[in-house]
Image: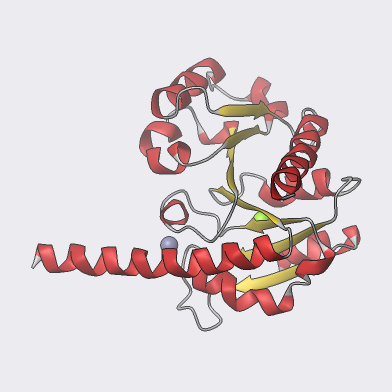
Length: 226
Ligand code: MG
Ligand code: ZN
């Protein structure tokens, strides 16, 4: 029985990867660099996007993944960039992650010709979003200092498969009994030397570096495509 179950999971991930490659081909055809942005709920993904995408030198769009509602998409409306809401309870069984097929269903609503960078804000969850490729170029995760030092050890796949870790809410450190050095040590234990930035969406600390990282990512990808 156990063997059959494993087989089914592998088939599902194979099917997902096939669709992810189709997404990737569409993004490449339109010269769009894609970020899969992941974190636990409330870590600050949307606020970090609000901060970084305003004033960004490249044309950005956002695909907002949520189980329900459009609260985060509404928060980005003032940026006057393309934002598409994708709800997993709209025909996808209220899934707690985005997969390649869900992202594919949203592509017709995205004006890929009008953007250079697409940020896909995944559903807040440290577990299954890490298992599903959606056709992204890179994975960025946000880990708030309020979540404690142990998260890399508890959710290693998420921390291991990302290309950049934004350590957010740095402004709250004086109020917390959290050892930042221990967090970074745990991060290196599961993903040695992964790029990380210490940021505060609230005070703006580190936001310039995050914005520069986004611009350089797009420049590097478009340079590689030429
Ligand atoms: Mg959000
Ligand atoms: Zn899930």
